[in-house]
Amino acid sequence: MMRSVLMILALIVLPLQVFAATQSVPSTYGALAAAIAGAAPGDVLFLDSGYHQGPVKLNKPITIDGRNQATITGNGTGSVITITGSDITIRNLEITGSGSSHETIDSGIQLHRTAARILIEGNTLLGNLYGVDIHGATDATVRNNIIVGRRDHRINSRGNGIYVWNAPGTLVEKNDIQYGRDGIFVNTSKRGVFRNNLMHDLRFAVHYMYAHDSEISGNVSVGNHLGFALMYSNRIIVRDNLSLADRDQGLMLNYTNKSDLVGNMVRGTGGKCLFIYNAHHNLIGDNRFEGCGIGIHFTAGSESNAMTGNAFISNQTQVKYVGTRDVEWSFDGRGNFWSDHPAFDLDGNGITDSRFRPNDLMDHILWSQPAAGMLLGSPAVQLIRWSQAHFPAILPGGVIDSFPLMEPISIPVPDNIVTLEAAARTTPIWLRERTENVSDTLAGH
Image (cartoon, rainbow, N blue to C red; front, side):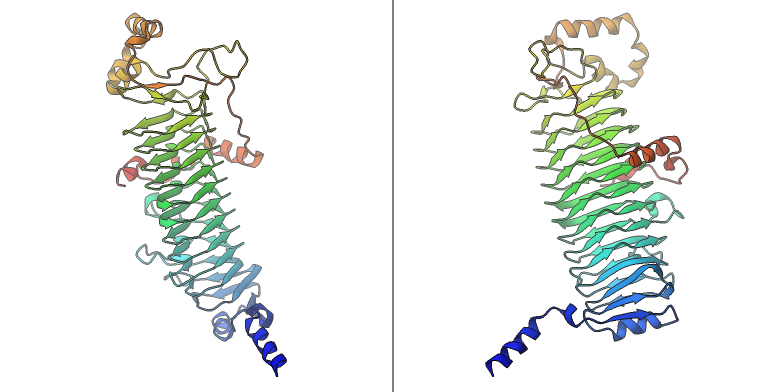
């Protein structure tokens, strides 16, 4: 008797997969909806090649696998796949045909707040208003998908590749996202990981607001208006990302605090490599800022940020900081590398023998009075700069690096990404798109 009871208990706790059935679903009218309605928890539906009718709704733990040969097509209204249940997997499908409403966030795949532990893997989402909408779901994973958004509206009026709202525990990795508005838009969430994604031909690669205790690492932004816009967020890790040939800014910290910005590279941005606005208590270290209009624009009272190990290479203006007090940009005896600092290292310790100021009084005058640029070549301006170099007491407040480095940090870029970067420089997508001003968009936050 006891043995029978134990056997019954063991059967009860066995996972659903033990009893799961597999079923092939033909690409005939109504077959997919019927298969979903008749599936038991844990079943796997393999879709035959061809087109399958959507939209569909999933509220029980099943797997839908297209085996890279099936397409689910919506009817142009709402989302193509809507998920309200838990432990559901969507993989190896092509998904297209969402509606066009921002109010209902019409998407290729939409996860509602009742959804949990959803896996979206290996799919191709084409021409939907939003690619994947994770709206209140918990512990969702979006991995190895190709998401190609729309181009039939101005860029600010399109949908995002992946939209995350109030979805703790989200993992988004190894996705290729193109067109649409923002690659990954995260709003009012926490404990998310966003890593190793490729985002190109967008407004922002990553748009991050009110999202705390999260990680953004190993992502690549190529040819977008702005790479990584990180706003109103605390305790985030921003590591080993690349921003290449982005138009306006590579990285932006806006009201972002107590975070680590480490090992990133911004190269070839027409505007600012890094914009720091009212951001405090951050570690900004071992990043490479190269070939931008401005290396770092540092403003709005940003304080107590540790700046160390960064490389400022061939930026038109290495640092733009207008202030009346000195700000030290070194930490624990280790400063940054400056390509325009002609210095020596006689003791061979890797630290130059003279400190460095990236800005002088004339910089401050030019920033506040642009018309003064006509006098740059005049003897009076040269005399002022010579005097400041020889009599530091007359220098205004500004950035000081007391321990500049002799060698810059090196950050490699994979060959395939270099190819994308070269193409973005040759024919940047934002020259061919109908776009609003990105700076105006940021001003609204």
